[in-house]
Length: 162
Image 1 (cartoon, helix red, strand yellow):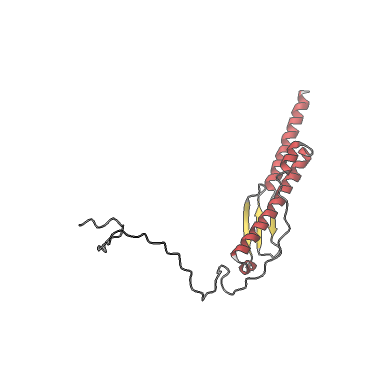
Image 2 (cartoon, helix red, strand yellow):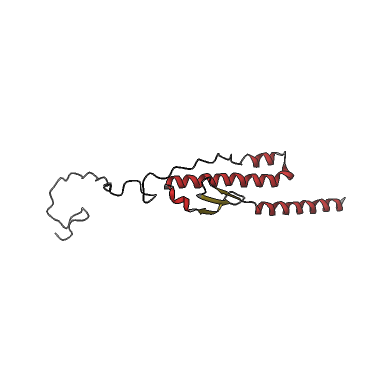
């Protein structure tokens, strides 16, 4: 009986090591539908690598951010499904497996490629190059109860040498 328990314990340890190695090797690489962004995530969903193709220059900063996030979400869902498929033979049909799979994000449909920006020039420029620069708002001045003749007053407390 003890020999049987030891053999089962060794088998469990071996399967556990195999499962751990498979999980450590799991990752997912996803390219956006337009090819502008490629991301790789670790088995825990952490971003490991991001790459931009020359096509990324056609995007505005908002569009590029959306393409990156969509690719990351798709890669995270793929990595989570890989981990679940590795664990499933040992824990399938259990509450532990149900708990694990409840965290797998639903993979979204890949977004359609955005149209190229309407303006020529920098993809980050939101106004025309020849448009006047916006002026910051001027804060209202507090009314002064007395007239100061001292022009050397920078801090509003008056001069020290009176």
